[in-house]
Amino acid sequence: MNNPFSLEGKVAIVTGGSKGIGLSIAHHLAAMGAKVAIASRKLDACEDAVAEIREAGGEAMAVACNISRREDCENLVKQTHDAWGQIDIFVANAAVNPVYGPLTELSDEAFNKVMTSNVHSAIWFANAAMPHMAEGGGGSFIIVSSIGGLRGSPTLGAYGISKTADIGVVRSLAVEWGPRNITVNCIMPGLVKTDFARALWENEATRDDRISRTPVRRLGEPDDIGGVAAFLAGPSARFITGEVIVVDGGTTIVGP
Image 1 (cartoon, rainbow, N blue to C red):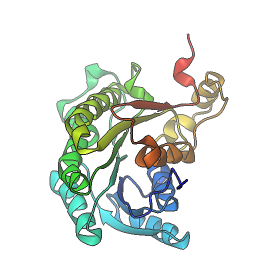
Image 2 (tube, rainbow, N blue to C red):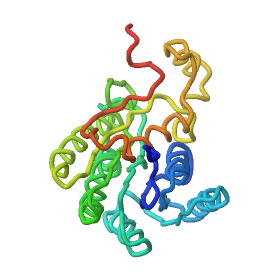
Image 3 (tube, helix red, strand yellow):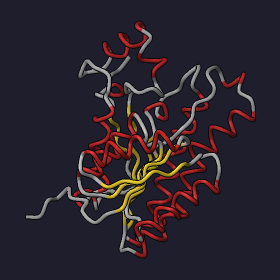
Image 4 (cartoon, rainbow, N blue to C red):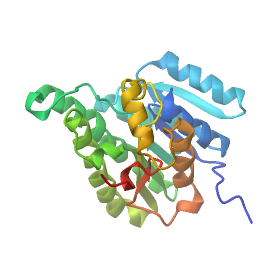
């Protein structure tokens, strides 16, 4: 039997791939044999991530991309396709959360920024990358969302709304592109120890409360997500599409 998780000969793009969850995903994809384009706003950070993957024996390239700009999103896809001639896997991991507070205090500018970066960019990426996937016989498109999209919050409402919207994007894309052999799925992590969530897990009271309400009694690590993304990108997940995979140690199954 061939390796059911092999990504040999595949080309992947990971946004927000220079650190945290995105970096773990990039490492997992490369370890399974994929060539990986790593994107984030800061090119030097991407180049550091590329160096890590090359040192581990993988193949990668760095591309600067601000997900709030359509031209950057389309350029990321173009540069990757120009370099390697195909695109098989896309992981839309990058996101923003510039506001903290109730929706009553949410400005139009802040809401538009959140929705553009966290939702609309995924559609830009899909429209740019999926035709290449279809030409190659199929592929996998993955959005990294958050369990914040499953619950209400008095302070992270805009972010949660965007993460709920990710589910709708995934399901619509899955229906549209399924006939071209492209699967589209969503990963919803719980609280993971990354720089993005540092304000939450470095707060002792917040951290201890979350751990006490999580069945596995710990916070998530980036590698807890990286392996799930690699699975969804590979041949073993070829009959899974339009789904939401919650990776939170059981946090959301616990009652009040």
